[in-house]
Length: 397
Image (spheres, rainbow, N blue to C red):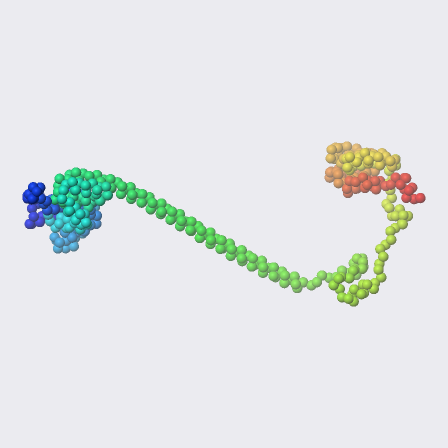
């Protein structure tokens, strides 16, 4: 993109003669123009001072005034930058427009640097600008200053190094910002997922609560119906007179009517039956077993009381035999004991099932008398065998 040069200006920089001052020092010349600077200065000034959008607008305005039509500049930003750099070496509408933009953007720096009249002051101001990261404004003020040509080459090298460092730092900052944005985006997605899960859990909890409330209402309705049905049931029928007679006279309740209580009080008191006489008790007692001269088999019982079982049987004149009912003794020995027994005392709570059924089958088949005791007890064993002869004599004087 090349534009025609200004018709009234030369294409090469013009060096004006410096008139001597009063003290013999060379007087300052006018400010240097943009098209009088080298290409390296154009690259740095355009890259550091103007954005690609601003450069594109400048080019579109200049081309529009030239062609008297609306122009649109397309292409990459880097192509636009180097195309405009090629046009900055000649004075024309484009270079003048860019110079005006630089003057407007860096006006405060230009006014401050215009007051500097010595090279040492320019050097100090440039060093301070490098330290304060104000290179774009200071670079244009230095290069356009009448005394800036002596420092031009060194300033361009330092400005290029600063631009490289600043670009790396800006790139690192953009990468860090991008990572921060990515983390923030990921955190937002995670928060959205958690929010969705929380909302789903709340919906499930609400549904479960509604179901529980519906079930509770159904159960309450069922309970109310059952209570209503229970209230309509007839009262229970009274027992027949025979049952009431067997139950004996009923006592009047505390909440009965006074007449009912008086009727019960008027009835004669029923005396409890008198205890039977010794002769009647002896007649009602079951007949004693005949133990004398017989072999008595005791199955089961308390192990430490076996000797006392033996003493009782032998005291009654019988022969004693014992089997533990299959706890430790074998069942084949039980069959032999049953075969020679005349009387069996089975303490059923202390034997196994097989021994119990063997005793029951043998006694039913052979007709051997058998006494079953539900619990092992020495007193029950004595009562089953009956009293000793001297006990009977004591009961019958």
